[in-house]
Image (cartoon, rainbow, N blue to C red):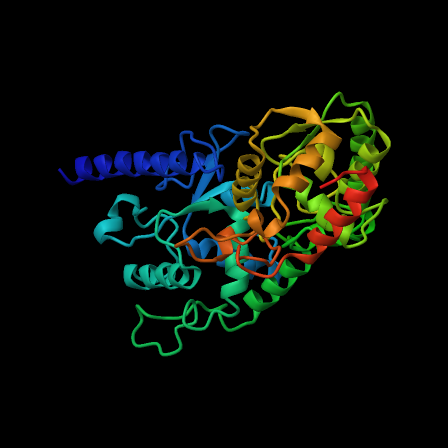
Length: 399
């Protein structure tokens, strides 16, 4: 009878993991698809549909600790999957019981020590991350939360007081391996589009040798992508752009950004449409390679991982707000000059769209797109105001 109950529980956990990933797929954080079995440590591989891993929270801390130790031991396939693609969806599972029993993985992946020690270990980590058991986010987002919120293993793997043999600290928890691994990880992490802009091919061997879980794009790769994307822009029938980047381009212009620009192609786009009266723009859904090709925060799947991996989500909201203000939809094509005239008429201040907080909502890390102006009643965002003024004259608009 016990075996049958365990089997039913295993099936239920798999179904729960699938439901979690499917729900998040609607938000764009990961795809709706059959997820990995929480009990087996399975890696569901692929691109788009059908990928993800389940991990105990302590396993990610152990991976960081191993970086600091310089350990070359054989690595768990799930950690390898994170290293190969930091934006793989990760479901954090632990033996929480009670109302979270649906996702309990059982003793698989337990550390040495009793069930109480292992439960405490994972729950302490989840509390510091402010995440619940069964939460699914990209590995990059979880790792940045770990690096930001867990600076040492005190109170986690290092229990301090050891009250019995069942409650012993991890022998490595006081060796400084985690702290060193965190330092190495942060050295190579890419929290924003302004990070790692000079990381080059010459830096790559050292970064890979460090076993860092996130390795930046190289300067050479980014500049080659910039060259290709600018050539494509010059030939495009309509330049694809996610809507809010049209406003970002104005802010950059007001701040003095001009070609060549290291981290995106917005200044080049502005110059192109100033010189080409017939240029057209197509409203793109999501990060567009033609604008973002050289960005340190564009990942292998051409997704936006700015702001510790979160930015694809607030950017989607800002895109939709921009479309609403303009009375347009994704896929619409419009003459670029006419489009900017509409933008300057309908969006006199970027506070009306970018970074604003809806009534009743609070500013938080998930929805903070990094611009820093978060109130429709706040002071006008001066780079946009100045850029709008300058470009109005450049285009010859009467606004």
